[in-house]
Each structure stands twice: as structure tokens, then as C-alpha cells.
Figure (cartoon, helix red, strand yellow):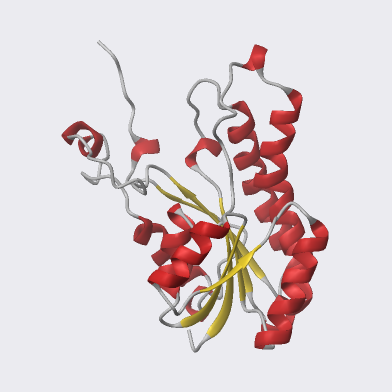
Amino acid sequence: MNKKVVLVTGGAKGIGKGIATYLCEQAVVIIADNDEDAGYQCVSENPLLRFKCVDVTSEASVNSLILEIIQQHGQLDALINNAAISHPYNAPVEELELDEWHRVLTVNLTAPLLMAKHCTPHLRKQHGSVVNISSTRALQSEPNTEAYSASKGGLVALTHSLAVTLGPDIRVNCISPGWIDVSHAPLRDIDHHQHPVGHVGQPDDVASMVKYLISEEARFITGQNFIIDGGMTRKMIYQD
């Protein structure tokens, strides 16, 4: 990757942390997250990472972040839109508060647009790329996940729209992870066996695809959504 400068939103925990950690050996990786304690914990665990405490829903904060990155590093090669929320907003639809709906869409869908808006001039100079982290919830649902599923479906659509708008200078792709184990809690055999590949996913399974998509090897790929779920969305489940 030749020391690209990569920005990962929501990179202090979960899949985002896995992506940032995976890339930092070969790239300058900046984590943008609103959890200050988790962010500095990442840096203490891995001094190669950089952390910025940022509210990705604030356009002024996003603009300041991007300007600071350019001032410090002189370039931006890739944006990974990973920041997202779901809980505690999984209320039954008849009890779903409108402000809760708006909050999920603001973090999960509007924030990626803001990041793309302010990163575009700098990504264009580098012929860089954007990777949006959606979810298999864009394609299938559990009960009471309307806000989350809608936001992730919107992110898939935003991906192909941005790909058409920003091409040929910037490539934009999407990853929709399935069950990725970020809690490190004990898993049952049935958890693994319901995946056609035979096991629950790990953050590196997503991070390796991110690394590929922002590399020159993926130069002919844009506007796509890659489902990384161990085959779960292809498996029909019947209850006897």
C-alpha cells in the first residue's frame, strides 16, 4: 500500500478497530471516533494508530478533522465509513420514537455522506477510494430493526450513487458484513454451524477486503457491495 493515509470512522471498537489495526502496518491510519477512552486505549495498545475524537454527525467537526489530516500528512488516500449505531433503538415499530429513527439515520447514513463530501477534494488528488461498511441487514432483517436496516440499505444505495458521481477519480465500494465476532464472548457450536463456511466471522475477514478494495489491485472495481457473511444470506432455514 506504500504508506497510504487512511481514515477509519468508528475505529475505536469492533469491526472498525479491526480494520484500523489490520491496515496500520502498511498505512498511516487515523481513527475518528466519539469514544475518547476507547480511542486512546487503541493508541496505547498500538502506537502506530492515530486517534481523533470527532462527532461524525457534525459537519463543522468533520471539516476540521479533514483539514487537520491534510495539514499533518499532506494527503488522504482512503476513507472507511464504519461508524454506526443500532442499540438501544430496536423498539417495536409502534413504539419507535421519531428522534430515535432520525438519530440512527444521521449516524449511519448522513455522516458517511458528510465524510465523503469533505474528503472528496483530497481523495480526488490521490485517485483514492471510499469503502462504506453496511450490513447484511440491508438485505434481511430481524424484528424491530427498521431504523438500522433502512440506514444500512441506504448506505448501499449511497455507495453506487457516489461511485457514479465521483468516478473515474475516486472509487467507492461497500462491504456488508454478517455475523462478525467482536465481543469475544463464548460461542456455541450452533453459532458456527449455521454458517456454510463452518464458523463465525472475525474482524480480519472484513479488514482484508477493505485492504484489497483500497489497493491498486482493485482498480477496476467500483459501485459494488461485497457480502462477507460466511454464506448465511444464501442459506434457507426451515423450522419443523
